[in-house]
Length: 154
Length: 154
Image 1 (cartoon, each protein chain N blue to C red):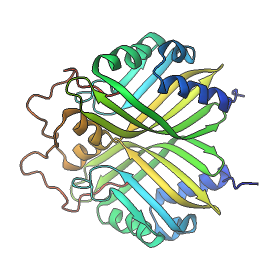
Image 2: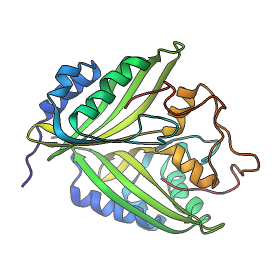
Image 3: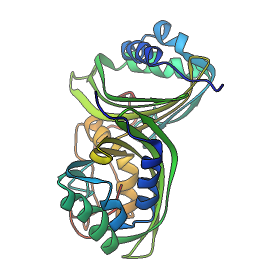
C-alpha cells in the first residue's frame, strides 16, 4: 500500500515550521528535499529552488532570523491527500530593520516521504510581498493601467 | 458533518474548466459562490473577490475570451480532503492584444457543498504574472534597496 501522511504529523510539522527554529523543523525535512519558492529572485533573494536538508534549514532559520523579529504563520486551509499536502496560510513578520510589518498569503504544496517533507512548492502573492519588503509601490510602465484589457485568469 | 466531495466530481470540474466549457463549468458553481483571486487588483484587474455565480462565470468566461485564448490548463496535482480540494495547475495562454504567450503556475483551494463550489481561493506568483501581462520588467522605485538583506520568508 502506498504511503500516506497523517494529519497529526502535518499539524506537528506546521507548528514546528511556524517557529522557524531549525532543531524543531529538522525532524520533518528529508535529506533529499527540494524546496522551491516561486517569485522574483532579484527582489526576494530567497526565491528559487533550494536542494538538500542543510540548505533548506539554513533558509528557514538563519536568513529569516537575521531580518525578522516576530513571525506568525496561520494556516487557513490544510488539505491532506495521500503523500501530498496543500496549505493556504497567512504569514506575518516584522522586519528587523525598521519594525515594519509584512503580511501576505502563501500556498505550500508539499509531498511527504517517510513522514518528512521531500518536496515543497511555495506560491506567494509575490507582487504584494515585494512591495511590502521594499516599503514602496513598484514602478509600473507608464501605459500600464488597470482595466486596460491586459488580463489573465486563474 | 460536512459532505465529502468525490474525486471524480473534482476531476470533472477541471475537465470542464480546462476546456473553458462555460455551460459545464456552471453546473459546478453554487449560486452563492465566493471566488477570490489573491493578487494586486490595480495591476491585474481580475484579482479580488467575486460573489455570486453570475459574477464568477462572467470573470471566467467573458473577460477571458475578450483578452486571451487559453492554450492549455493542466492540473499537475489534485488533492481531495473532505469538502475541500486543492490543486496545483499550469496555465498557458496567448494574449489577444499582441499574440504573446504567457504561462504560470497557480493553486486553487476549493470548498464544495452539495457537489458545487461555494468557495475558491486562487493564488499565483503575482509578480511574474504582472510582468508577463504587462510585457515589461517591473522595477523598484528609485532609491529602493534591493537585495540588501531585507527578507521575508515562505
